[in-house]
Length: 255
Picture 1 (cartoon, rainbow, N blue to C red):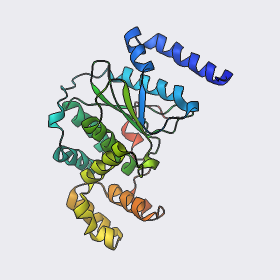
Picture 2 (cartoon, rainbow, N blue to C red):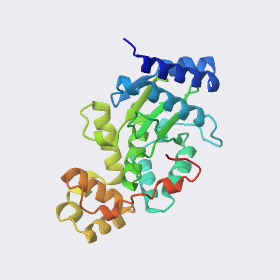
Picture 3 (spheres, helix red, strand yellow):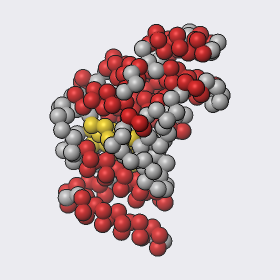
Picture 4 (cartoon, one colour):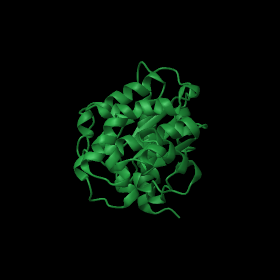
């Protein structure tokens, strides 16, 4: 049974789509099959509107290469992760992925939604990563981006599907989410390297910096992984780059 509130939200979304999308595009959007993060009923239409906005903006992208899934590999994802080394890494990552036919759109989340990223296809079959930057942290940006690229590489086949993700659910038991998490983690820090590293075995500021230098990644990625695996979220927070990602996108308005 729909409530008056859900009715009004649905009408707002329909009106929005009526203004910005063709009939064919609207048909695709309303068939959207959300995967990954379970979308609650109260946030369904907000999530639908957000994905619509991301896809509409993706169609505005220019100079995007042709996507070939055969060109995506663990080595390419490691090259992507190494861009975190640079202060302008997030913008460089978008340019990097566009060369391989993947469009990245930074679009702030709508009210009633707690999503961080999504992977989906346009009606023309172009793979798109949407990111909200809900958490303005360097480690969150890179893990979310790599997680969504992993979905595009391994799991995204149908235009009706959209993988919706929240960073808090890195421990998901869903098979596709577990695989995307593993791919993202290994792209940043291969498991064999991590398990024998002093940054894991006896973490200090120096060992975190040393591993980051060895792998040519931002130390935020090392500190963020350490926090997640130990549950000590107050430790080494100075490495996380809080507030440093959104400033890479001055053309996006965050509320």
